[in-house]
Length: 115
Length: 111
Image 1 (cartoon, rainbow over the protein chains, first blue to last red):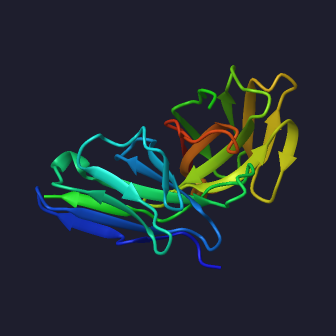
Image 2: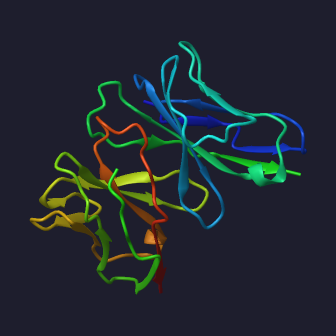
């Protein structure tokens, strides 16, 4: 049973370009969480999605950032017109549909570097 | 989610037992206490979860007093590979939409 898969592992973009980060949750999981982490800091909640629905996006910047979790395929975190301040590690986590107090399963993250 | 407070950093030596305490004064009745471990350049990994008293697994023990306003993660006989950031989370995943991580405790194990 494969774990949470994130790709790419590293992504380099120039200012003004778009970044697309992908997250495939564990098999059977229908809840996805995205977090951002700056060096030497904790994880900052961005968005929580269920299949085809955004449940809580209170941690997402209002502009340039969007997330989706379609019925088929991975969850996508999209950052338009990237700036240097977007450079960070982005982690996603998944949990099962029944939402017991099960643990979250995290991917290895995508390290975004904006030049 | 209940707010948590834990030490920013700790140092210990190989072979020692390490105890990291987390304060969560406003824990709710249905909240669970969960600890995660994060190595550099990796996502957090679940260590242990408990509701009350004591929980033990192959990695750690979790001690929770009767009032549940704090908890202590205990790592027996640590090694250099236990150097990581440890996060304490308190909440009810069945109710909470956000699952918030604090800054965690940076544990350095010295030879």
